[in-house]
Image (cartoon, rainbow, N blue to C red; front, side, top):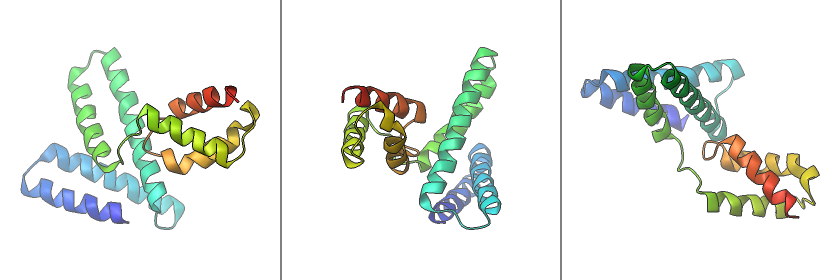
Length: 149
């Protein structure tokens, strides 16, 4: 619920500064998180909040790609603005070196012996990379590291 409080503060700031676009984006984020809370019938923990924000971020990125293909720069700009606000609440993305290091650490931790242990490694990584790295990138990197064993 810490995140909701931060969003509420940002909403107040946007209202005071009369930033309509920011206000709309912040209210969308808050509504999305509230809907997740209602769906689960309990408050979200920090990991679930980050997962929800990561989901919103990915949706915006996909929308941006679609709008670019459709040659709609007005909608691209709007989605990029919303994406920047969503990303301001996400933790710092992992660099490639940090991701590789974390993957190697998890491989050691779960005693992975090859590609057949990918599920174990991905499960161990899930909470550590949520919102900080794209799942496809993580999956590809885990496969590469497991092939080296």
